[in-house]
Amino acid sequence: MPGPEPRTDLLPLPNRWFYALLTVGIILNSTGLVPPILEPDGALYATIAKRMAQSGDFVNLYAVGADWLDKPHFPFWVTAVSFLIFGVNTFAYKVPALLFFMGSVAYTYAFARLMYPKIVAQVATLVLLTAFHGVLSNFDVRAEPYLMGLIIGAVYHFWRVFLTGEGNTISRRYILPESTIHILLGSLLTGCALMTKGVFVLVPIGAGLVIHWLLTGQWRELLKIRWYVVAGLSLLFTLPEIYCLYQQFDLHPEKIIFGGTGVSGVRFFFWDSQFGRFFNTGPIKGAGDKFFFVHTVLWAFLPWSLPLYAGIGKAIAGLVQRQPASRLPEYVSLGSGLATFALFSLSAFQLPHYMNIVFPFFAILTAQFLVGLRATALRRWTVGQTVIGLLLIGLSAALLLLAQPGQVGLGLGWVVATALLTFLVFRENSLTSLVGRMVGTMLVLAGVLNLFLYPTLMQYQAGMTAARYANEQPALAQRPTLLYMPGTGVGGGSFWTYEFYAGAPTRYVRSDSALRLQLQQRPQQLFTNAELADSLTSHGFDVQSIAVFPYYHVSQLSYAFLNRSTRSGTLSPYVLVTVRNRKQP
Image (cartoon, rainbow, N blue to C red):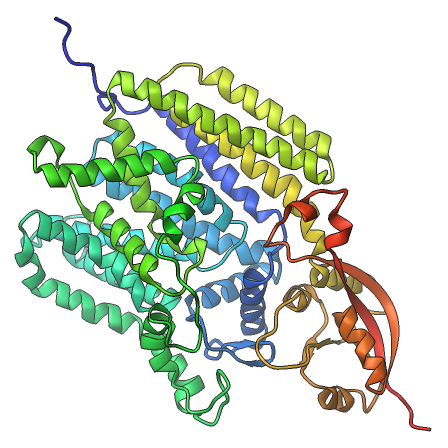
């Protein structure tokens, strides 16, 4: 009788293939540096960091010319420092986030390597580099790339503390005991994560560790003093955020925030920004769907979503069966991933990118499942994943043909050449070929989106286009611009990209009376949408058009906008004008 089929986890991926695929993964994520900053959130965060860098004020956060209380400071501090080094530009805004993302890749490899065969760490690294929404986050930069590196980094160091035990032996390589170093580094990364997103980051950092200890009967680990030292140090490293919030808001109860006075920045940080959103009782509200992330992860973790779900199912089944052979080496990845998934699913405030922060844990679960497949099952999964890859490649080509971006022929050549090379090199039904085909697939998709599609579509960010136009006109380049946005709130539309990309100063104007004050001395350059510009004439102002710029909310793509033949019907105009007070007869 034939023996059992061999497993695929006997040998690691050949170094030449692993490092080649790793390099491709880094390159495909780096293509996100090419397109401009996407509206609205990325542009808003960029303007906040721009003001911080130019003013030298690293304590107060301002948006639209007013105090801003929403996100903590850490990403803005990092971005502002990048602006001081590289200048205020797209690259300087995005490159720190990319570096933190790459840090998450390195920590994922290191964490997996502690408990799994080398091949699991290799595959997990490549899965993380090619998960779709992770790649997208390096183009549409928000807080998530920072959090990915900070969270998995903190977990890695705390896991090292746990593995070290109570010995605290002094290594010749370190001045301090090794466990002390990991306690300090883990606490520092936790503090930075808290200063990036708030107290809910403690769930992906801590839940997996606690669940592992409970499932493995090591619950007494929770009583050890070192974890209370970690909690105290993490709070200590968070003090810069608390100080800044106290200085900007708690010392100034007269400030109008969220339409009222007496708002505590410290309370917002610890409660309203997190629990207020979770229970939908805070100033920023949402409408949650309990199954939102179930279907979101299906596309956000492409091309790996199916093996991810299979891996999670297998791990849970192993827990239920309680068979020694089905036990995982660690339950941190499963615990952190599922606890965060459940928390966000129950929250009243949900956005697709929220789940990115546990992609490192998802990548490990996916890799552990794929590496554990028997030969026959691996061949089936390779065929299935190849079908997914071909569909994504076909979608990439269809997007180019539909949108007809600049250099569409070159873009189609990119798709065909990269796809052919991928499938010529990785021809076998093996784990190396499975991973190689998916890396090649995502190289195709990332190149289409970041090198061809978005650079063309983002020309319809009217604020960015208008700012660049003004910068290139000698008569306009040095003139300050008024951004006319009547009403309250932080605004939106295309004003933030104008503020960021404008070389000259900008100032927000919220009312006609404020505009009249600005025009007392001389006419001013003003940017707004065409409807508001038309209303100025009836409000007693003389308006002279300089240029008109088509606008579309590019972060919400639609078929009509993508289709070049129907795109014009989806556009609305923004204008750059000269405005003056009308002389009274």
